[in-house]
Amino acid sequence: MDPLLLELGMLLIFAGFAALAIAMLIAFARGSSTKVEGGGLVLIGPIPIVFSSSKRVAIALMALALAIMALYVLAVWLMST
Image: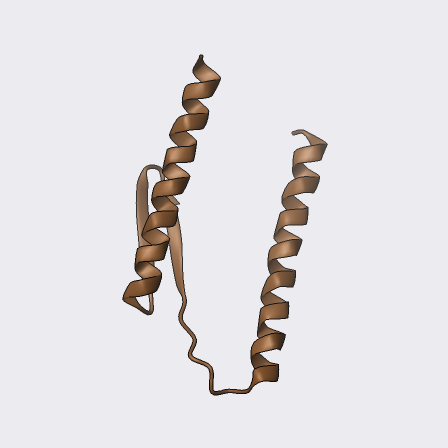
């Protein structure tokens, strides 16, 4: 395994946790009257599984799934040529 990719992956995971912690602190500082919406996206091969608390978040996650799949197809196509 390439050490650079390992370090980059660990850095991205740490950045995600840091962003989550900062967002929670900002939401706590604003008060408890904020509306929270959330969702998740799981890609199992070419099949996206989307779950969310609102229709707006679900549509955004479906668009994200399409973008990720398009980038994957583009990367595979570029690597094969």
